[in-house]
Length: 389
DNA sequence: TCTGGGGTCCTGTGGCTC
DNA sequence: TCTGGAGCCACAGGACCC
Image (tube, rainbow, N blue to C red):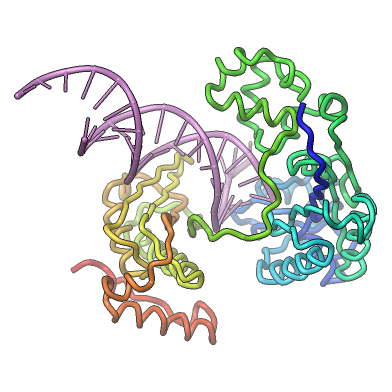
């Protein structure tokens, strides 16, 4: 058994995107709201209001299926800019309780309130005050989990949704936690859940009790991690500082599958341009460039290339992507999705100015400036200018 | 029925060097 | 000179998360 005296909260916004839409558009309140792809499109549901969930609509469900289940629903395209603004304000609100706030995603955060108890009272009282302020200031509800580790706090938040406060302590590891399905643990998805079920392991208690040799035979090195999960152990503390991204990428699914090389090249140029804009916004350069293709069969392939030195220009990325495109089965097979991923990121701006040529750097800076003023679509790049001679 | 987009992390494999 | 093993790295793919 392990002992932790920390008090960690996991704050999870309820149906975040849909709730933001309902908060800013009163006419949507009380209606089933589905945020994701547009009607008739190829998208899936990003999130939906609890009214839509009552119709059977779920996250990650194809839009077409959601339409059949909930024809009266309001189908909205996501507005990430608006959600980002609300997210920033919520993080500020959370930081008024402790500076130990770890932003886990756009709608989730962990707070280490161990040192805040003297000022704000016990964790449950802090959780209640957070819920009250989130509702009063933003018209949104959130579920909060309390636990001695991030993992237990996260599971606890899911126990009483929406707008609830759940708590899992040390004592619950040998009690309530055992009753939960293995899929309730953060890190066990559908594939692992099915593999565990094949071993007859469906609850956390079973995962705690199974001989380690059985787990090791089935999962190899992954067995240890599964065992840690089963006992609610997560060694990682709450880390307030947000690390730099490890990769930036862009991908798009075509409205209609294509095997036209020109269409693919044009899509790649646009994606590379957007990914590179992200790169420059962070002041980063990338040394690894990856091409991702999903064929009409849904089979996905990736091809990656490491550059001789870090780069941060669309031209360098696009030329590399064209090379990678030659390595895969295009022109013959139909493609539904194409993506670009830039990795192995570093701060290497000085090196770039020497190595990549001042013209491309200056061009990139000028493009960023115009787009900052008039929007991203104000300027497009011409493939002919960027392709190798 | 028909499966998004943006990420992180892990594992297996194969090439290379010592 | 040849060979096997260890260690490292790049790469591909997959699982998972929101």
